[in-house]
Image 1: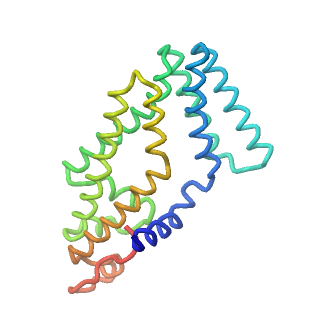
Image 2: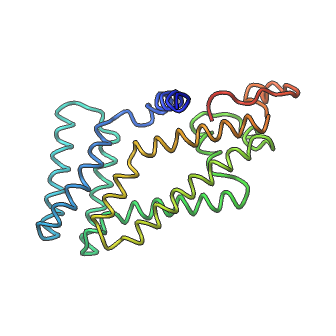
Image 3: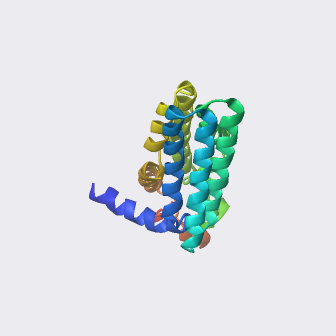
Length: 226
């Protein structure tokens, strides 16, 4: 448990620059909850316009507070698109369609990348850490990234599948969204981080530094980062 706690703190510190605005995370949760609740008491169009007004008020508030609007803006645009789809479909469930498509698409890409022997986790890690691509493809390194890619792909397949199954029940869709929020995703990230590192160490492959320096075996494997 202590190891998990340490890894959680380590990873949270590493990725905090990816989304420094806790406000944008809060906003992304407020909008769907408000919309689903409103849709139960108001006509769909009224719920859509009310949610759009709430989103606009939040953006104006962030501007007034002179906060970083990068992620807030992305969330605002994404929510407006979701509301537009709900309006076109004539159903509150339409609000969740973009997220379902996103999860399903990433899961599909994950399956294909695993089948062709180029797990997507290699490229997401390289984009973040800029380690040599050849290191990731080493026979004593790649299996660890394949394992983590399988875990994430299964997670996204289950998430997308549940949302498709309960598509006509927006109340359940919002529960699924909350259950798979950023904090839950961070926990899974910690779990896969630990699993990936343990797999790397079991493979006894080279660390990034050892690979770059052409250090001969025995190797210490990568002790930090994944």
